[in-house]
Length: 379
Image (cartoon, rainbow, N blue to C red):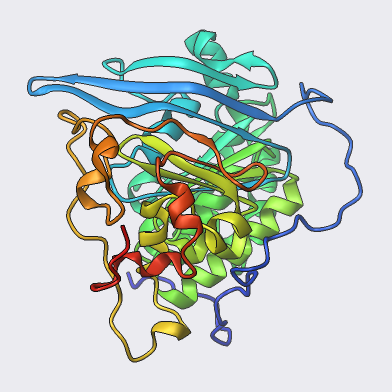
């Protein structure tokens, strides 16, 4: 059977997010009634000194190393970094979906309650109801032998004592919310009958069907073409506002972050190396790795020229180099960088932190993304 195409519509340009010099602002909204178990004060989610290690035959993989961040209601936090930087593992820890072999330390506070100290039953009650996740590959996340409607209804009935009829009615509403045409008819369709973009819409519907407080979107636009990617991101923002949720957006695409996020957390070699507002991180990076990521993005300034990739490769998480793990690739490296790993510390901007001994040098450079260009002579 041929895969169903996207609903006929004119090709949409990528969602117009803020320019790099203007941070995204939450849409003006009246204050909704607080939902279940929400604390009136403090962040919705607090991750404190989270570390995740995996023992292997070759040694211990330090997948996540002492990361901390907060997430407020209705906020969008972008977590960016290269493959293997610990983005997905940190979020799987929040969801309680790591394998038993994982050694997890730190605290994950959801409205002040430590998720890591909860029983397996208590963690299951949170998944899908308080915290939901949109996985990278919808084809493997969806069950190929069950209709879409049954899978959406199961997500409802696993948390609420309702009839299948009521659950299917809610599934229809969610499919309509994410832009699936003829939603009632499509309840009986199987995953292979949908195109890639439509399957990702189904995954968004499944994530929000119980109106969670937090949505973790793990590379939600992987393997989608640019037009469909723009539609999915636009729909994700609409759905977020409809269910009044906060989002943790995991991606390696800084263009996606620029259009959606209020704050950005940059990860490298398992730890956070920079954290600030979207405006701060994009216009005034204080970590050479972040500057390198920004310099590798095509933009109007590089039209007709060559992009500036970051040389080298990320280090092994089993055998990390001494000092700063980015030092073998950094154009600003000096002796202390190779001896002492810098702490995540305050910079010259309020709320903007970076793990770099030489952030002050980077701050004095007019075009920080140019440090990886040959012949700049920056030291």
